[in-house]
Length: 95
Image (cartoon, rainbow, N blue to C red; front, top):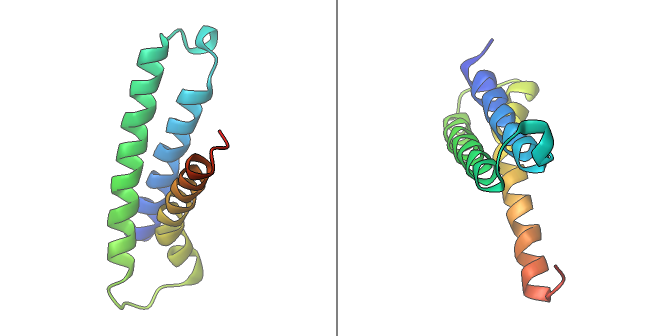
């Protein structure tokens, strides 16, 4: 498996873990809300760093197949779209 695919899959994994750890009910995980928020932020941070690394390495001009391009570039695009949605909701006053 290509290293860019591995980075993209790892980024998706950590972004998903961050989403999952923040969305789990407290009784399921046994965490306090502060611990769940901390774990979610750590997973989001690692996922964002991996997404940035994969995106920057996919732009080097080498010939990549479609799946590798998608896995290397999609996590950063999803994070960007999510931030844009939160920004627009905050600016419009619709929480």
